[in-house]
Length: 244
Image (cartoon, rainbow, N blue to C red; front, side, top):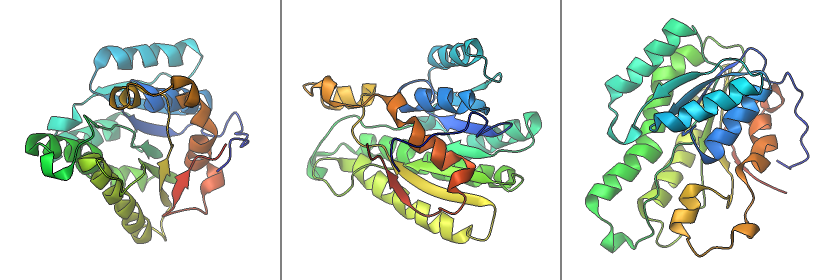
C-alpha cells in the first residue's frame, strides 16, 4: 500500500474497533485515525493514564466516545481474554475490527544468551496474546458484516532479534492460517509491517539512531485505514508493508 490512499471521512462509520497497545506510538496514532473516520475505539493497554490521554484526544477531536480496557498482556490468562470478549459483548454486542499493535522488545541478543524469563514474556505479548484475543473475539467478529483482524509483523529471520523476531514470524503464520480458515466468511485477516517508525520501543532498542530518518506513527494512517476499511474486502492472508 502507498501513502497516497485517500480514506473517505466516513470510512469506519459505526464500526467498533479494538486496538491493543493503544496508549502510545502506532496504537495511539491509529486509534485517533480510526476515530476520526467514524469508528468507536476500545483502547486496550497496560498504562491507564496513557489510555486516558488518548481517550481525551479522541473526545476533544469530536470522535465517538471510546472505551478503556486496561490489561497487562504479559500476565494475562485465557480467562482474562474471555472476560474481555464478554465485556465487549455486553456493552457493544459485536466487533468490526481488531488491530493487534501491542509489542514487547526488551533488547537485542543472541539466542544462546537470551534470558528464559524474558523469552516467555516476549512470546506472551507478541504471539500468545494476539492468538487468545482473536480466538475469544471471533464470535463477536462473526456478527459484523465486514470485519478485519490486523496483526503487526516486522522483519524476521534477522540475527539478534531473539524472541521478538521469532514471534513475528509466528504472527505471519497465524495470519495465513486464520485467513485460510475464514476465507469464506465476512472476516478478512492480514498483517502489517510498518517498517522503521519513531516509537518509544524503537528508541529504546536503537538509542543512537538518528530520529530524523524515521517516519512518525501518524504517517502510517493511509495504510492502516485501507486495511481496516471496505476497500480491503478482497485482500486476506497478506503481509502488507509501508511504501512511501
